[in-house]
Amino acid sequence: MTAVDFDAVAEVLRNRCSGCHTEGGPAPFALRTFEQARAWSSSIRRAVASGAMPPWHADPRYGEFANDRRLKASDKAKLLAWIDGGSLPGSASREAVAVEQPAPSWSIGVPDLIFELPEDVTVPAAGEVPYHGYRVETGLGEDIWIQAAETQPGNPAVVHHIIVQAFPGAGAIRESPGGDPRTAGDLGGYAPGTGPLVMPPGVGRRLSAGAVLDFEMHYTPTGREETDRSRIGLILAAEPPRHESLTALCSTPFLWIPAGERDVQFEADLIFPRATRLLSLRPHMHLRGDTFEFRAEYADGTSETLLLVTGYDFNWQTTYRFAEPRLLPAGTRLRCTATYDNSSDNPLNPDPTRDVSWGRETTDEMMIGFVDYYEVED
Image 1: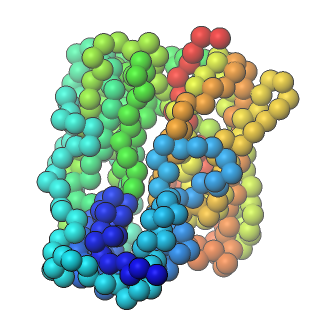
Image 2: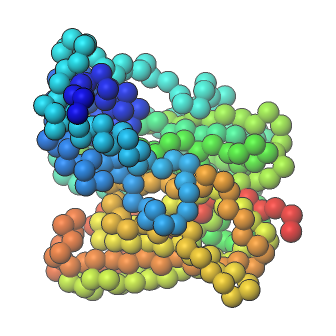
């Protein structure tokens, strides 16, 4: 068998790992150089062989997703062969940087508009930092159409995740299409490994005049006092789109998860009165979340699973973007089913002796299925 050296795996690390595994990034160690990769080779082998890295929690039996993070079989075999073969350096110097650190930039291109937190946020050195929402005025004098949105943490070392939503300004409240009061102006957000919000051609997201942005920030202390000033960049559509992209919430706040109980299940549903194309799905639970299923129930009595997330991990707030928008005929019911594990068998459970209900903090629970979609002609 031909020996595999570092030259053969550097591209895999650069394309699939270094986005998080970089100095000052959200991962616990960097993988930008040969020396760093060799030092962590045992950990890399365990994570890659088990499928824990790169993180991807969608059951492969259901759906095809454009942002699937799983390694190709050939890349996985290459990494394991390099480690099992002694982690050879290859032709490059052992000190050579295999993955260049990019300058701060936007993956969506230079934004037309940028909105940031109103001031620097101080994150303490230790302890649990409560969720906090920061209100950002847009000052828009008219409605605009967004083609893409990218949220960037000011300090990736302390930002666990960000959710950005737009709310109408005073006097600008519009009834959502279909009369669904749960429809929200979601602009995406940030979580390790999650990309920007990008609309397909002919589809845009409206940001109304006077809109207010809410940055829901979740910070994780690093052991020293830090500061952050996160931001969002927007690319505007060149012309008004044919379809308006919306976000609906498939959710129930009536959660009660008894202490020590496993497989506690809750359901919520959402009916689409018009023909609809789904762009993406995102489950949201906290530390006791275990599985989350999105299931389409059609008017003819048939049904199918669109997404099944197993082994849910709060640390990865993944948005699952369909490779092709999924068509739902008029009258389709989207049923969301979430299960929770409040027992001591759950290694992430902070307190299996406590009954848990709906709440904003990480130690409470939530059940929300975020659904990005647009309506089409029947």
